[in-house]
Length: 430
Image (tube, rainbow, N blue to C red; front, top):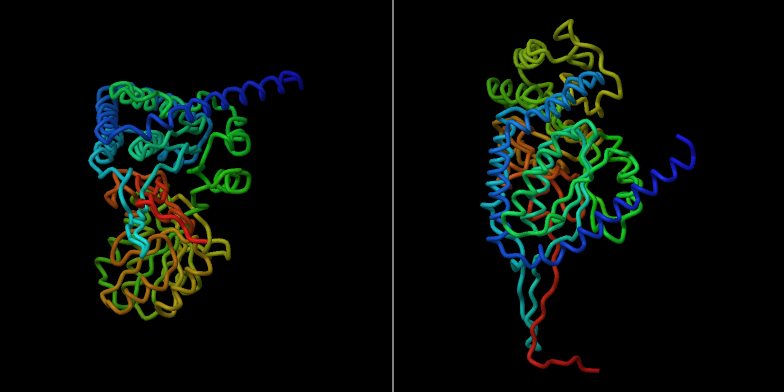
C-alpha cells in the first residue's frame, strides 16, 4: 500500500469512527429518558432473538474457529472463542437476568437535610457513551450490550478480528431487541471493521464522544488502552489469581477447589495461576494436591519443596510467580503460614482474585481482611470471579482499579451520580 492509499484508509476509519461517535451521542438522551419497562422489553426481545437465531450464531462462530485454527491460535484462545449450544443459552439467560435486575437509573443513593432546609439527594445517572474493546470472547458482545442498555449507556463495541463473524451475528440480535422496543439502533453499535486503526481512534481520537473505555482481553491490549487512552479507563491488566491451602484445610475440599480453580476453564481471568500451600499442612495433603493437578493434565512448576513431592514437577523460575498462564500450567510454592501467603500475594499478585481454604475461621478472617484484591474468597473456587455468579446477570469485566468500579463490572458499576438539591427559596448569605 502506498503512502497516499494508507492516508486515505486512515481518513476513512477516522470518518467511520466519528460517525459512530456522533450517533452514540445522539442516542444518549432518548436512552437516558427511556423507562425501565422499555429497556427491559429490548433486553428480553434480544434474548429471544439470540435463542431463535442460535443456529446462525453457531455457524458464524464456526467460521471464526476455522480461521483461528488456521492461524494456529492456542488451545486457551480457541476455548475463549468457541461457542456451543450451552454458551449461547448462557447468553440468553444472561440478558434475561439483566432484565430482571432492579433499574439503577434515578435511584437515590443517599439523602439528607441541611439546617437551612435544603434537601440533598445523591442520584444514580448513566456514565455516558461507553467504548468497549475486547478480544476473542464473542459472549462479551451480548453481555456488554445488555449491561450498557440496562444502565442506559450507549455503547460502541469493538471486538477482535478473530471473532468478527460471531460478534456480528450476536449484534444483529441485539438490534432486533432495540427495534422491538422502539429504542435507537445507535444505542448498541458494533464497529464494522477489523482495521486496527479503529482501536487507535477509540483511544485517542474520540474524546469528544466517549466518556469511558473498558478493555477486555490480553495483557498487551489492556496495557495499550491504559497507556494511550485519552478518556477514563475501567479495566484490569491481568488475573494472577492465588489459592492458599492452610494447615487447617479439609483435605477433600482443598483438592476439589484447587482442581476447579485451575482446571474448570484455564483461559478465564479467574483461573488460579498460583497455589500456595502451608508448610504445616499434612504431607499427604501436599502430595495429593500436586499429584491431582498432574493427573488432571496440568503442568506444575514448583519450588524445591514441591519438586521433592513428585519428579514431574518442573523448577519454577522467578517469573512464574507473577505469570497469568491462561493455560493448564500452575506455579506451586510452600509458604510458612497465612502471613507468608498474604505477603506473597501482595508482592506477586495482580489484585484480582484470591482464595483461602481453611476450617479455621480466625485464619480465614485474617486473610480476607488483609489481602487487598478486588475479590477474596473463603472455601470457594476463584472461578466464581464472575458477574453472573455474583447475581449481576453478566459483567463487562473484572476491574482491579481502585477508583469508581472494583471487581465485577455490572449494571450498578456502569453508573455515576449527580446531586439533586431541593429548596424553598434559600439564598446563601454573604
